[in-house]
Image (tube, rainbow, N blue to C red; front, top):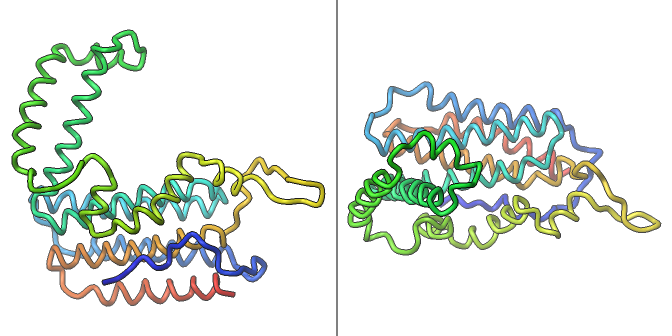
Length: 272
């Protein structure tokens, strides 16, 4: 089983001057293009709902990887951890869609629960200006809620064999047999997304001779986000393999070999 060993969010001992930023961008861009083209070159997918969602989640993973390329190009590195976190979540759902026949119904149940929650909130706080469009555009919210509840109750019976609170991402990591990753990598990504104080200091504080230096722009360099980059590639590879296996597209070796070549080149840059 392939692991996410690239991602420890620990630095490896760096020599920033040795790094060619444009080379990093080019290698990752090529990997994203290979990941996208590998699916585009295949036959049309089955229109089964599960297959459609697998394709949508794979496409989302590739899109988030492309957004990481964009952040590298503009040197807006603060955007990489949140994008990577969302990419990771999409990967978890893709794994579970491939593993469990009824997992798409789990995702739909979460959607229904969110819709019910939102509509109920419009009754509890009708003066909230952010509910204005919902209140104006859904005439009979009470009946809509009841319809959603009936649908959700029926759905719960079909997915009752899934254990835990399925609305929690932790449960979905566990279903994918990646609970340890949730408690490790994912927790750190959440700290970045939620602006935990330690991550805030990591982004904007550096030590100077006379005390702390505060930077208005995230003071990371490409090396600081190298774990995100390398693990993004690992996720792209695993996702590609899963899709090829699920859709019986044959052997993805030619694409994986190309990705591996670029991956190794990136590793060589980061290991200088």
